[in-house]
Picture 1 (spheres, rainbow, N blue to C red):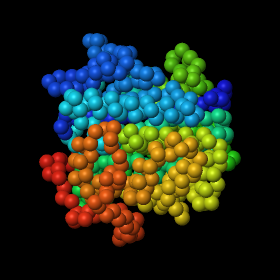
Picture 2 (picture 1 turned 120 degrees about the vertical axis):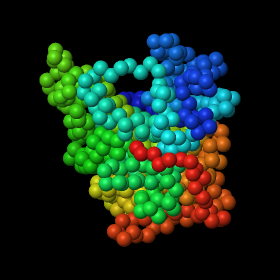
Picture 3 (picture 1 turned 180 degrees about the horizontal axis):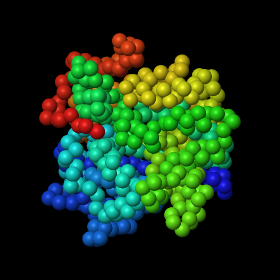
Picture 4 (picture 1 turned 30 degrees about the horizontal axis):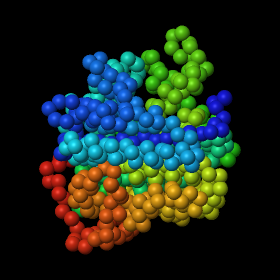
Length: 500
Protein backbone atom coordinates (compact mmCIF):
# COMPACT_ATOMS: atom_id res chain seq x y z
CA UNK A 1 0.00 0.00 0.00
CA UNK A 2 3.01 2.27 0.21
CA UNK A 3 2.70 5.25 -2.09
CA UNK A 4 -1.08 5.04 -2.30
CA UNK A 5 -2.29 7.51 0.30
CA UNK A 6 -5.43 8.49 -1.62
CA UNK A 7 -5.68 11.40 -4.00
CA UNK A 8 -5.90 15.18 -3.73
CA UNK A 9 -8.53 15.03 -6.49
CA UNK A 10 -10.26 11.66 -6.12
CA UNK A 11 -12.25 10.28 -9.04
CA UNK A 12 -15.74 8.84 -9.11
CA UNK A 13 -17.51 6.63 -11.61
CA UNK A 14 -19.86 3.75 -12.06
CA UNK A 15 -20.91 0.61 -13.85
CA UNK A 16 -24.37 -0.25 -15.15
CA UNK A 17 -25.25 -3.73 -16.40
CA UNK A 18 -28.43 -4.44 -18.36
CA UNK A 19 -29.92 -7.68 -19.64
CA UNK A 20 -31.62 -7.45 -23.03
CA UNK A 21 -34.41 -9.72 -24.24
CA UNK A 22 -36.24 -10.45 -27.45
CA UNK A 23 -39.61 -11.19 -25.89
CA UNK A 24 -38.57 -13.42 -22.99
CA UNK A 25 -35.52 -14.92 -24.71
CA UNK A 26 -32.09 -13.42 -23.97
CA UNK A 27 -30.54 -12.04 -27.14
CA UNK A 28 -27.40 -13.44 -28.75
CA UNK A 29 -24.47 -11.48 -30.14
CA UNK A 30 -25.78 -11.96 -33.66
CA UNK A 31 -27.94 -14.36 -35.62
CA UNK A 32 -31.44 -14.61 -37.00
CA UNK A 33 -32.93 -11.83 -34.89
CA UNK A 34 -31.55 -8.52 -33.61
CA UNK A 35 -28.60 -8.89 -31.25
CA UNK A 36 -25.80 -7.08 -29.48
CA UNK A 37 -23.93 -6.56 -32.76
CA UNK A 38 -26.88 -4.46 -33.99
CA UNK A 39 -26.82 -2.41 -30.78
CA UNK A 40 -23.07 -1.86 -31.08
CA UNK A 41 -23.42 -0.79 -34.71
CA UNK A 42 -26.13 1.71 -33.76
CA UNK A 43 -24.00 3.24 -30.99
CA UNK A 44 -21.06 3.63 -33.38
CA UNK A 45 -23.20 5.26 -36.10
CA UNK A 46 -25.24 7.55 -33.87
CA UNK A 47 -23.56 8.34 -30.59
CA UNK A 48 -19.86 8.96 -31.20
CA UNK A 49 -18.69 5.53 -30.03
CA UNK A 50 -15.77 3.73 -31.67
CA UNK A 51 -14.67 0.10 -31.75
CA UNK A 52 -11.92 -0.55 -29.21
CA UNK A 53 -11.59 -4.35 -29.40
CA UNK A 54 -12.73 -7.08 -31.79
CA UNK A 55 -12.64 -10.86 -31.75
CA UNK A 56 -10.57 -12.92 -34.19
CA UNK A 57 -13.29 -12.54 -36.84
CA UNK A 58 -13.45 -8.76 -36.56
CA UNK A 59 -16.67 -8.61 -34.53
CA UNK A 60 -16.70 -5.61 -32.12
CA UNK A 61 -16.56 -6.70 -28.48
CA UNK A 62 -15.67 -3.41 -26.74
CA UNK A 63 -16.70 0.15 -27.64
CA UNK A 64 -15.31 3.42 -26.32
CA UNK A 65 -17.52 6.47 -26.10
CA UNK A 66 -17.56 10.04 -24.77
CA UNK A 67 -15.95 10.67 -21.35
CA UNK A 68 -13.95 7.44 -21.73
CA UNK A 69 -17.15 5.44 -21.43
CA UNK A 70 -16.72 1.74 -22.21
CA UNK A 71 -19.41 -0.62 -23.52
CA UNK A 72 -18.56 -4.31 -23.26
CA UNK A 73 -20.13 -7.70 -22.58
CA UNK A 74 -20.34 -10.03 -19.62
CA UNK A 75 -19.94 -13.79 -20.10
CA UNK A 76 -23.28 -13.93 -21.91
CA UNK A 77 -23.84 -11.57 -24.82
CA UNK A 78 -27.30 -10.65 -23.53
CA UNK A 79 -25.72 -8.72 -20.63
CA UNK A 80 -24.42 -5.33 -21.73
CA UNK A 81 -22.03 -3.52 -19.37
CA UNK A 82 -21.39 0.22 -19.41
CA UNK A 83 -18.52 1.65 -17.35
CA UNK A 84 -17.06 5.10 -16.80
CA UNK A 85 -14.66 6.14 -14.06
CA UNK A 86 -13.17 9.35 -15.44
CA UNK A 87 -15.06 11.98 -13.44
CA UNK A 88 -13.55 14.15 -10.71
CA UNK A 89 -15.05 13.47 -7.31
CA UNK A 90 -16.56 16.92 -6.87
CA UNK A 91 -19.88 18.61 -7.60
CA UNK A 92 -19.00 19.30 -11.22
CA UNK A 93 -17.80 15.75 -11.81
CA UNK A 94 -20.91 14.28 -10.18
CA UNK A 95 -23.15 16.41 -12.39
CA UNK A 96 -21.31 15.20 -15.50
CA UNK A 97 -21.58 11.60 -14.35
CA UNK A 98 -25.34 11.83 -13.79
CA UNK A 99 -25.79 13.45 -17.19
CA UNK A 100 -23.75 10.69 -18.79
CA UNK A 101 -25.98 8.00 -17.23
CA UNK A 102 -29.12 9.82 -18.42
CA UNK A 103 -27.72 10.11 -21.91
CA UNK A 104 -26.91 6.41 -22.08
CA UNK A 105 -30.37 5.43 -20.79
CA UNK A 106 -31.98 7.55 -23.52
CA UNK A 107 -29.73 6.09 -26.19
CA UNK A 108 -30.27 2.47 -25.16
CA UNK A 109 -34.04 3.00 -24.97
CA UNK A 110 -34.09 4.46 -28.47
CA UNK A 111 -31.97 1.71 -30.02
CA UNK A 112 -33.68 -1.24 -28.32
CA UNK A 113 -37.14 0.14 -29.07
CA UNK A 114 -36.33 0.45 -32.77
CA UNK A 115 -34.92 -3.09 -32.80
CA UNK A 116 -37.98 -4.48 -31.02
CA UNK A 117 -35.97 -5.51 -27.96
CA UNK A 118 -36.66 -5.13 -24.23
CA UNK A 119 -34.26 -4.15 -21.46
CA UNK A 120 -35.06 -6.24 -18.40
CA UNK A 121 -36.10 -4.22 -15.34
CA UNK A 122 -35.03 -7.02 -13.02
CA UNK A 123 -31.60 -7.35 -11.44
CA UNK A 124 -32.12 -11.08 -10.88
CA UNK A 125 -33.83 -12.52 -13.95
CA UNK A 126 -36.02 -15.61 -14.11
CA UNK A 127 -37.72 -14.88 -17.41
CA UNK A 128 -36.05 -17.78 -19.25
CA UNK A 129 -34.59 -21.19 -18.50
CA UNK A 130 -30.83 -21.48 -18.18
CA UNK A 131 -30.69 -23.46 -21.43
CA UNK A 132 -31.96 -20.35 -23.25
CA UNK A 133 -28.63 -18.68 -22.55
CA UNK A 134 -26.49 -21.48 -23.96
CA UNK A 135 -24.99 -20.56 -27.32
CA UNK A 136 -25.25 -16.88 -26.41
CA UNK A 137 -21.82 -16.59 -24.84
CA UNK A 138 -19.93 -13.42 -25.65
CA UNK A 139 -17.47 -13.65 -28.57
CA UNK A 140 -13.77 -13.07 -28.22
CA UNK A 141 -13.35 -14.34 -24.66
CA UNK A 142 -9.79 -15.72 -24.32
CA UNK A 143 -9.29 -19.36 -23.35
CA UNK A 144 -8.35 -19.74 -19.70
CA UNK A 145 -4.64 -20.62 -19.42
CA UNK A 146 -4.24 -20.17 -15.66
CA UNK A 147 -4.27 -23.78 -14.39
CA UNK A 148 -5.72 -23.08 -10.97
CA UNK A 149 -8.29 -20.60 -12.23
CA UNK A 150 -9.30 -23.06 -14.95
CA UNK A 151 -9.85 -25.74 -12.30
CA UNK A 152 -11.68 -23.18 -10.14
CA UNK A 153 -13.93 -22.26 -13.09
CA UNK A 154 -14.61 -25.92 -13.94
CA UNK A 155 -15.62 -26.76 -10.37
CA UNK A 156 -17.96 -23.78 -10.16
CA UNK A 157 -19.07 -23.62 -13.78
CA UNK A 158 -22.68 -24.71 -13.36
CA UNK A 159 -23.56 -22.58 -10.37
CA UNK A 160 -21.55 -19.58 -11.62
CA UNK A 161 -23.13 -19.72 -15.05
CA UNK A 162 -26.63 -19.92 -13.59
CA UNK A 163 -25.95 -16.78 -11.59
CA UNK A 164 -23.87 -14.97 -14.17
CA UNK A 165 -26.61 -15.22 -16.75
CA UNK A 166 -29.19 -13.89 -14.30
CA UNK A 167 -27.58 -11.32 -11.98
CA UNK A 168 -27.09 -7.77 -13.25
CA UNK A 169 -26.16 -4.78 -11.14
CA UNK A 170 -24.95 -1.22 -10.86
CA UNK A 171 -21.77 -0.30 -9.02
CA UNK A 172 -20.47 3.09 -7.90
CA UNK A 173 -16.89 3.90 -6.99
CA UNK A 174 -15.79 6.85 -4.90
CA UNK A 175 -12.20 7.97 -4.33
CA UNK A 176 -10.64 8.84 -0.99
CA UNK A 177 -8.34 11.59 0.24
CA UNK A 178 -6.26 9.61 2.74
CA UNK A 179 -6.00 6.24 4.44
CA UNK A 180 -7.94 7.45 7.47
CA UNK A 181 -10.65 8.83 5.16
CA UNK A 182 -11.00 5.44 3.45
CA UNK A 183 -11.38 3.65 6.79
CA UNK A 184 -14.11 6.09 7.83
CA UNK A 185 -15.93 5.58 4.52
CA UNK A 186 -15.76 1.81 4.85
CA UNK A 187 -17.17 1.93 8.39
CA UNK A 188 -20.19 3.90 7.13
CA UNK A 189 -20.67 1.58 4.15
CA UNK A 190 -20.64 -1.50 6.40
CA UNK A 191 -23.71 -0.15 8.19
CA UNK A 192 -25.39 0.83 4.90
CA UNK A 193 -24.83 -2.46 3.06
CA UNK A 194 -28.03 -4.31 4.20
CA UNK A 195 -30.20 -1.27 3.47
CA UNK A 196 -28.70 -0.70 0.03
CA UNK A 197 -29.35 -4.33 -0.88
CA UNK A 198 -32.96 -4.08 0.30
CA UNK A 199 -33.85 -0.73 -1.27
CA UNK A 200 -32.06 -1.24 -4.57
CA UNK A 201 -33.42 -4.66 -5.54
CA UNK A 202 -35.96 -5.45 -8.24
CA UNK A 203 -36.60 -9.10 -9.04
CA UNK A 204 -39.19 -11.57 -10.12
CA UNK A 205 -40.75 -13.40 -7.14
CA UNK A 206 -38.23 -15.97 -5.96
CA UNK A 207 -37.69 -18.35 -3.05
CA UNK A 208 -34.78 -20.19 -1.47
CA UNK A 209 -35.31 -23.95 -1.76
CA UNK A 210 -33.19 -26.39 0.26
CA UNK A 211 -33.62 -30.03 -0.78
CA UNK A 212 -31.02 -31.29 1.68
CA UNK A 213 -28.29 -31.54 -0.94
CA UNK A 214 -28.06 -27.97 -2.20
CA UNK A 215 -29.76 -24.63 -1.94
CA UNK A 216 -31.31 -23.06 -5.03
CA UNK A 217 -33.05 -19.83 -5.97
CA UNK A 218 -36.24 -20.63 -7.86
CA UNK A 219 -38.93 -18.58 -9.56
CA UNK A 220 -41.89 -18.95 -7.23
CA UNK A 221 -44.93 -16.93 -6.23
CA UNK A 222 -44.86 -15.58 -2.69
CA UNK A 223 -47.94 -17.51 -1.58
CA UNK A 224 -46.75 -20.75 -3.20
CA UNK A 225 -43.40 -20.46 -1.44
CA UNK A 226 -45.02 -20.01 1.95
CA UNK A 227 -47.46 -22.86 1.30
CA UNK A 228 -44.61 -25.24 0.37
CA UNK A 229 -42.47 -24.24 3.33
CA UNK A 230 -39.84 -22.35 1.33
CA UNK A 231 -38.40 -18.98 2.26
CA UNK A 232 -39.48 -16.16 -0.08
CA UNK A 233 -36.55 -13.96 -1.04
CA UNK A 234 -37.09 -10.23 -0.84
CA UNK A 235 -33.55 -9.52 -2.10
CA UNK A 236 -32.25 -12.39 -4.26
CA UNK A 237 -29.12 -10.41 -5.19
CA UNK A 238 -28.00 -10.64 -1.59
CA UNK A 239 -28.35 -14.44 -1.70
CA UNK A 240 -27.08 -15.24 -5.20
CA UNK A 241 -23.35 -14.69 -4.90
CA UNK A 242 -22.88 -16.27 -1.45
CA UNK A 243 -24.52 -19.41 -2.88
CA UNK A 244 -22.00 -19.45 -5.73
CA UNK A 245 -18.83 -18.23 -4.02
CA UNK A 246 -19.34 -18.10 -0.25
CA UNK A 247 -15.63 -17.58 0.49
CA UNK A 248 -15.02 -14.62 -1.82
CA UNK A 249 -18.33 -12.72 -1.70
CA UNK A 250 -20.67 -11.01 0.75
CA UNK A 251 -19.51 -9.15 3.85
CA UNK A 252 -17.04 -11.36 5.76
CA UNK A 253 -17.24 -11.15 9.52
CA UNK A 254 -13.50 -10.54 9.90
CA UNK A 255 -13.62 -7.66 7.41
CA UNK A 256 -16.44 -5.99 9.35
CA UNK A 257 -14.53 -6.39 12.62
CA UNK A 258 -11.31 -5.07 11.07
CA UNK A 259 -12.96 -1.97 9.63
CA UNK A 260 -14.89 -1.12 12.82
CA UNK A 261 -11.97 -1.75 15.20
CA UNK A 262 -10.39 1.65 16.01
CA UNK A 263 -7.08 -0.09 16.68
CA UNK A 264 -6.94 -1.54 13.17
CA UNK A 265 -5.35 0.47 10.36
CA UNK A 266 -5.61 0.93 6.61
CA UNK A 267 -2.81 -1.61 6.24
CA UNK A 268 -4.86 -4.17 8.18
CA UNK A 269 -7.73 -3.77 5.70
CA UNK A 270 -5.42 -4.22 2.71
CA UNK A 271 -3.79 -7.17 4.45
CA UNK A 272 -7.22 -8.81 4.80
CA UNK A 273 -7.67 -8.76 1.02
CA UNK A 274 -4.09 -9.92 0.43
CA UNK A 275 -4.52 -12.98 2.65
CA UNK A 276 -6.83 -14.52 0.04
CA UNK A 277 -5.47 -16.92 -2.58
CA UNK A 278 -4.36 -15.01 -5.65
CA UNK A 279 -6.28 -17.28 -8.01
CA UNK A 280 -5.92 -14.86 -10.91
CA UNK A 281 -2.11 -14.86 -10.68
CA UNK A 282 -1.34 -18.47 -9.74
CA UNK A 283 0.38 -20.54 -12.44
CA UNK A 284 -0.12 -23.90 -10.75
CA UNK A 285 -2.94 -25.83 -9.12
CA UNK A 286 -1.42 -24.91 -5.73
CA UNK A 287 -2.13 -21.18 -5.40
CA UNK A 288 -0.45 -18.83 -2.95
CA UNK A 289 -2.02 -15.93 -1.15
CA UNK A 290 -1.15 -12.51 -2.46
CA UNK A 291 0.90 -11.88 0.70
CA UNK A 292 2.90 -15.06 0.05
CA UNK A 293 3.54 -13.96 -3.52
CA UNK A 294 4.62 -10.54 -2.28
CA UNK A 295 7.28 -12.22 -0.12
CA UNK A 296 8.34 -15.07 -2.41
CA UNK A 297 7.73 -13.58 -5.85
CA UNK A 298 5.40 -14.93 -8.51
CA UNK A 299 5.98 -17.75 -10.94
CA UNK A 300 9.07 -19.88 -11.36
CA UNK A 301 11.22 -16.77 -11.94
CA UNK A 302 10.09 -15.22 -8.63
CA UNK A 303 9.23 -11.91 -10.23
CA UNK A 304 8.19 -9.20 -7.74
CA UNK A 305 4.48 -8.43 -7.61
CA UNK A 306 3.26 -5.07 -8.88
CA UNK A 307 0.33 -2.75 -8.31
CA UNK A 308 -1.20 -4.14 -11.50
CA UNK A 309 -0.97 -7.62 -9.95
CA UNK A 310 -2.83 -6.35 -6.89
CA UNK A 311 -5.61 -4.96 -9.09
CA UNK A 312 -5.90 -8.33 -10.86
CA UNK A 313 -6.09 -10.05 -7.47
CA UNK A 314 -8.78 -7.67 -6.21
CA UNK A 315 -10.82 -8.36 -9.37
CA UNK A 316 -11.26 -11.98 -8.19
CA UNK A 317 -12.72 -10.88 -4.82
CA UNK A 318 -16.43 -10.18 -5.21
CA UNK A 319 -17.22 -8.73 -1.79
CA UNK A 320 -20.03 -6.22 -1.29
CA UNK A 321 -17.33 -3.58 -0.88
CA UNK A 322 -14.05 -3.61 -2.77
CA UNK A 323 -10.91 -1.49 -2.31
CA UNK A 324 -8.25 -1.16 -4.99
CA UNK A 325 -6.07 1.49 -3.23
CA UNK A 326 -7.54 4.23 -5.42
CA UNK A 327 -11.25 3.94 -4.74
CA UNK A 328 -13.95 2.24 -2.73
CA UNK A 329 -16.49 0.36 -4.82
CA UNK A 330 -20.06 -0.37 -3.68
CA UNK A 331 -21.37 -3.51 -5.44
CA UNK A 332 -24.82 -4.09 -3.89
CA UNK A 333 -27.29 -2.16 -6.04
CA UNK A 334 -29.55 -3.69 -8.66
CA UNK A 335 -29.61 -2.59 -12.27
CA UNK A 336 -31.47 0.57 -13.28
CA UNK A 337 -30.43 4.08 -14.23
CA UNK A 338 -32.24 5.66 -11.26
CA UNK A 339 -30.45 3.28 -8.91
CA UNK A 340 -27.00 4.17 -10.17
CA UNK A 341 -27.79 7.90 -10.12
CA UNK A 342 -29.27 7.98 -6.61
CA UNK A 343 -26.48 5.73 -5.32
CA UNK A 344 -23.93 8.14 -6.82
CA UNK A 345 -25.47 11.13 -5.02
CA UNK A 346 -25.86 9.18 -1.78
CA UNK A 347 -22.21 8.06 -1.70
CA UNK A 348 -20.51 11.03 -3.32
CA UNK A 349 -22.15 13.54 -0.94
CA UNK A 350 -22.35 11.24 2.08
CA UNK A 351 -18.74 10.07 1.93
CA UNK A 352 -16.86 12.95 0.28
CA UNK A 353 -18.57 15.94 1.94
CA UNK A 354 -16.85 16.21 5.31
CA UNK A 355 -19.83 17.78 7.08
CA UNK A 356 -22.19 15.08 5.77
CA UNK A 357 -19.76 12.27 6.64
CA UNK A 358 -19.35 13.62 10.19
CA UNK A 359 -23.12 13.83 10.68
CA UNK A 360 -23.56 10.25 9.45
CA UNK A 361 -20.84 9.03 11.79
CA UNK A 362 -22.51 10.78 14.74
CA UNK A 363 -25.87 9.27 13.83
CA UNK A 364 -24.42 5.75 13.56
CA UNK A 365 -22.65 6.15 16.89
CA UNK A 366 -25.97 7.03 18.57
CA UNK A 367 -27.65 3.94 17.13
CA UNK A 368 -25.10 1.70 18.84
CA UNK A 369 -24.91 -0.65 15.84
CA UNK A 370 -22.11 -3.18 16.44
CA UNK A 371 -20.14 -5.41 14.09
CA UNK A 372 -22.34 -8.38 15.08
CA UNK A 373 -25.48 -6.45 14.12
CA UNK A 374 -24.06 -5.73 10.66
CA UNK A 375 -22.98 -9.21 9.60
CA UNK A 376 -26.10 -10.78 11.10
CA UNK A 377 -28.21 -8.28 9.13
CA UNK A 378 -26.27 -9.15 5.99
CA UNK A 379 -27.32 -12.80 6.45
CA UNK A 380 -31.00 -11.97 6.97
CA UNK A 381 -31.53 -9.19 4.43
CA UNK A 382 -32.32 -11.62 1.53
CA UNK A 383 -35.40 -12.73 3.48
CA UNK A 384 -36.46 -9.60 5.35
CA UNK A 385 -35.45 -6.72 3.10
CA UNK A 386 -35.86 -3.28 4.66
CA UNK A 387 -37.32 -4.82 7.82
CA UNK A 388 -34.04 -6.59 8.65
CA UNK A 389 -33.12 -5.88 12.31
CA UNK A 390 -29.88 -4.02 13.03
CA UNK A 391 -29.58 -3.61 16.77
CA UNK A 392 -32.33 -1.17 17.79
CA UNK A 393 -32.75 -0.13 14.13
CA UNK A 394 -33.67 -1.82 10.86
CA UNK A 395 -31.77 -1.81 7.58
CA UNK A 396 -34.43 0.54 6.20
CA UNK A 397 -34.40 2.98 9.11
CA UNK A 398 -30.60 3.32 8.99
CA UNK A 399 -30.64 4.01 5.25
CA UNK A 400 -33.52 6.47 5.66
CA UNK A 401 -31.55 8.47 8.26
CA UNK A 402 -28.51 8.59 5.99
CA UNK A 403 -30.66 9.75 3.04
CA UNK A 404 -32.07 12.57 5.19
CA UNK A 405 -28.56 13.69 6.17
CA UNK A 406 -27.32 13.58 2.57
CA UNK A 407 -30.36 15.53 1.40
CA UNK A 408 -29.57 18.30 3.88
CA UNK A 409 -26.02 18.62 2.59
CA UNK A 410 -26.60 17.99 -1.12
CA UNK A 411 -26.88 20.94 -3.52
CA UNK A 412 -30.44 21.44 -4.71
CA UNK A 413 -29.55 20.27 -8.23
CA UNK A 414 -28.84 16.76 -6.85
CA UNK A 415 -31.68 16.38 -4.36
CA UNK A 416 -34.25 15.25 -6.94
CA UNK A 417 -32.08 12.19 -7.73
CA UNK A 418 -32.90 10.88 -4.24
CA UNK A 419 -36.69 11.04 -4.69
CA UNK A 420 -37.11 7.51 -6.15
CA UNK A 421 -35.06 6.08 -3.28
CA UNK A 422 -37.14 7.99 -0.72
CA UNK A 423 -40.31 6.60 -2.32
CA UNK A 424 -39.02 3.03 -2.00
CA UNK A 425 -38.09 3.64 1.64
CA UNK A 426 -41.56 5.03 2.29
CA UNK A 427 -43.52 2.23 0.59
CA UNK A 428 -41.22 -0.79 0.77
CA UNK A 429 -38.61 -2.34 -1.46
CA UNK A 430 -39.25 -3.15 -5.11
CA UNK A 431 -38.64 -6.82 -4.42
CA UNK A 432 -41.22 -6.96 -1.62
CA UNK A 433 -43.86 -5.42 -3.85
CA UNK A 434 -43.08 -7.76 -6.73
CA UNK A 435 -43.21 -10.76 -4.43
CA UNK A 436 -46.93 -10.24 -3.91
CA UNK A 437 -47.78 -8.39 -7.12
CA UNK A 438 -45.72 -10.05 -9.86
CA UNK A 439 -47.96 -8.74 -12.63
CA UNK A 440 -46.42 -5.31 -12.05
CA UNK A 441 -43.31 -6.77 -13.62
CA UNK A 442 -45.13 -7.07 -16.92
CA UNK A 443 -46.12 -3.40 -16.75
CA UNK A 444 -42.56 -2.44 -15.98
CA UNK A 445 -41.21 -4.53 -18.87
CA UNK A 446 -43.35 -2.42 -21.21
CA UNK A 447 -41.95 0.84 -19.85
CA UNK A 448 -39.02 2.46 -21.74
CA UNK A 449 -35.71 2.02 -19.94
CA UNK A 450 -35.16 5.75 -19.47
CA UNK A 451 -38.63 6.34 -18.00
CA UNK A 452 -38.59 3.66 -15.30
CA UNK A 453 -39.05 4.52 -11.67
CA UNK A 454 -39.16 2.24 -8.64
CA UNK A 455 -42.25 0.10 -8.67
CA UNK A 456 -43.40 1.80 -5.49
CA UNK A 457 -43.83 5.06 -7.43
CA UNK A 458 -46.48 3.28 -9.50
CA UNK A 459 -48.37 2.05 -6.46
CA UNK A 460 -51.03 4.78 -6.33
CA UNK A 461 -53.82 2.23 -6.88
CA UNK A 462 -52.46 -0.19 -4.31
CA UNK A 463 -52.21 -0.19 -0.56
CA UNK A 464 -48.83 -1.50 0.57
CA UNK A 465 -48.47 -2.93 4.06
CA UNK A 466 -45.32 -4.31 5.64
CA UNK A 467 -45.90 -6.57 8.63
CA UNK A 468 -43.55 -8.47 10.89
CA UNK A 469 -44.50 -11.62 12.73
CA UNK A 470 -42.52 -14.50 14.16
CA UNK A 471 -42.36 -17.97 12.69
CA UNK A 472 -42.39 -21.10 14.85
CA UNK A 473 -38.63 -21.09 15.23
CA UNK A 474 -38.59 -17.45 16.30
CA UNK A 475 -37.03 -16.14 13.09
CA UNK A 476 -38.41 -12.85 11.78
CA UNK A 477 -41.00 -12.52 9.14
CA UNK A 478 -41.72 -11.90 5.65
CA UNK A 479 -43.04 -8.49 4.49
CA UNK A 480 -46.39 -8.80 2.70
CA UNK A 481 -48.15 -6.64 0.17
CA UNK A 482 -51.79 -6.59 -0.90
CA UNK A 483 -53.53 -5.04 -3.88
CA UNK A 484 -56.91 -3.37 -3.59
CA UNK A 485 -58.35 -6.17 -5.73
CA UNK A 486 -56.93 -9.02 -3.68
CA UNK A 487 -53.65 -10.87 -4.10
CA UNK A 488 -52.47 -11.25 -7.67
CA UNK A 489 -52.26 -14.61 -9.40
CA UNK A 490 -48.94 -15.97 -10.67
CA UNK A 491 -48.90 -14.87 -14.32
CA UNK A 492 -46.04 -17.10 -15.48
CA UNK A 493 -47.37 -20.69 -15.32
CA UNK A 494 -44.95 -21.84 -18.03
CA UNK A 495 -41.83 -21.01 -16.06
CA UNK A 496 -39.89 -23.89 -14.59
CA UNK A 497 -38.14 -23.68 -11.27
CA UNK A 498 -34.61 -22.53 -11.99
CA UNK A 499 -31.79 -24.06 -9.94
CA UNK A 500 -28.87 -21.74 -9.32
